Image (cartoon, rainbow, N blue to C red; front, side, top):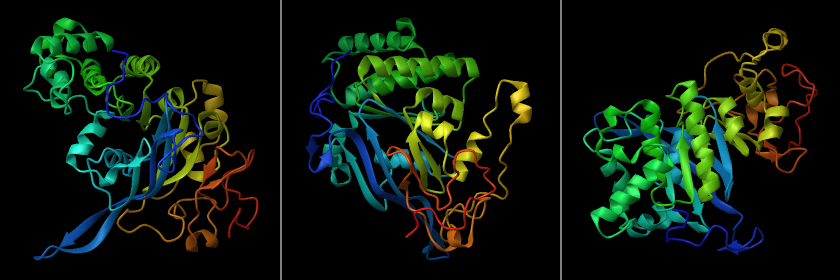
Length: 368
């Protein structure tokens, strides 16, 4: 179980200073200027009249062995970004660099080898499992596709039963169907399928959002245990900021197809610089009723703009309480803040001890 499958260099080889094809080996996954613009067609001839900019120029790096949390409102492009990384969707523009190589130029045969090391756990444990297949067939399907786990059906059955036990299920569940399991058990089956090939990267697309709180904790603990045992790298997508804080090493905040803030967990939760991040964090409930009543909530006005017609300049300026005229005309880059590991795309970032509604100055922060 603990041995890596073939299909790429071992994640422990090389150092942070080594490079592969000009890319740092410190990072398992990188995206550069990644875009996904879905065409809007209309009329009898179905001509393209516009585009939905679901992902609009994302630069992101994921270190080996870490968990990168990805948060944002519904419709901001988180799941689309996950599917672009896995090449379940073909991007409009950009690069997806996995283990030092841009995989967007790979043909189907080469991608099959890459997919052994890139897996996904889907959001809905009910829709992601084929109701006509037994658990044994579901979990063994990737083994058959990639021709691993033994040459005979008996070898694969033993491998699947071993995987079921690893995720906390009974090996006797092999011949049961998905409808015979609870939501938490179904998600464990999805996790068993994802780790069957000993991948290096697993994208968790809101894996606990459809589960009860107690079951969420069990699945989160399972994912953390598997990460330690098999040296996995996670991209963890979620709405629940408390869950993201618990499991993530670094957190990226996404708004309308763009990354607006990126930092390590402690820095982002304690010292948010982007007003959107500060508003999201203010919505996290505090278990102390006295502190909950005393704290100031940041309530954003208006709806999220349409990605088919995003605002000019900073995409967040239509809802931002700190927005100035400069924000309407210029788009802020994702720039380093006081800490090297902290980046924010805001001309008027929130400083420590400052009210979000009161920008300290009308002069843009580090603006060109």
